[in-house]
Length: 296
Image (cartoon, rainbow, N blue to C red; front, top):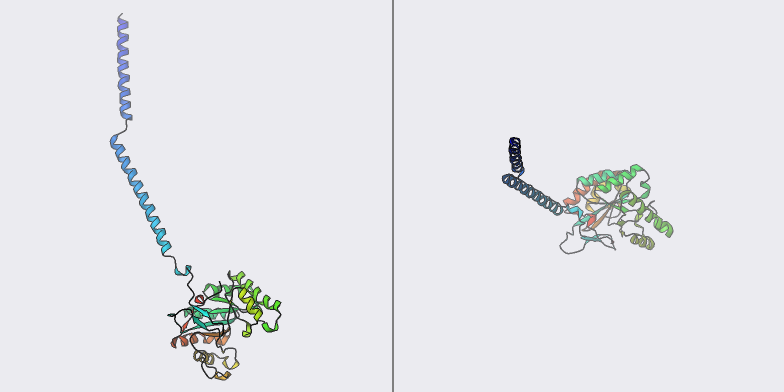
């Protein structure tokens, strides 16, 4: 009997001890209200910081779009080439009329890159009219790429500098279109302007040039291909004044909108800086070819 009583007492003690242990474990495993509040606050801070970062990123992206460089948007045309005399004409009132257009033929032969660098230093624009037979080597291609990357317009001056009136229609077309393809192959775009060698256009060559999306132009005056002006000082004076008395032009051809012809020549390269400065001293601005109306 005593053994039974003792056994019952031991069982009661053991049951009581297990109950206390479970209560203790339950208490230990119960969430701490203070810890939960701290965790909630931490999560709120992280979410707030993330929201602020996302908002700041969106604002920066929006600002980047607003601050895109102006050159990404093409400027609206302000001038056109006169069909009759190839002069530069303002499209609207209020646009500066006292401008001249600088053009350089027979590029890129020996001095074109030097001339481009001179013009770039002076912040003066120009069109470089290219011949295909000056694009025979990798070096020639690189020169043309450099001139184009410097911001100068590249024009078509036929592949072989052919005299178009003496060429068949098939030959005329090939002279024009094959050079367009060659130029596009090198710089990634076709010319917007065409000038026939010697200014000798035909109805057919003009038609082909326009079909190719090019504006046809000759020039107002130029003297560097006349022997008396194959000298830097004499050429400089002739181009700045517009007069060429040694070739029967005793009067000035310089006027607002004049289209000035020059070539890739040693004496022209030597005179170029003074020509630009001299024209500016007379109040003339070098018109940017990108402002000329083109065929769309």
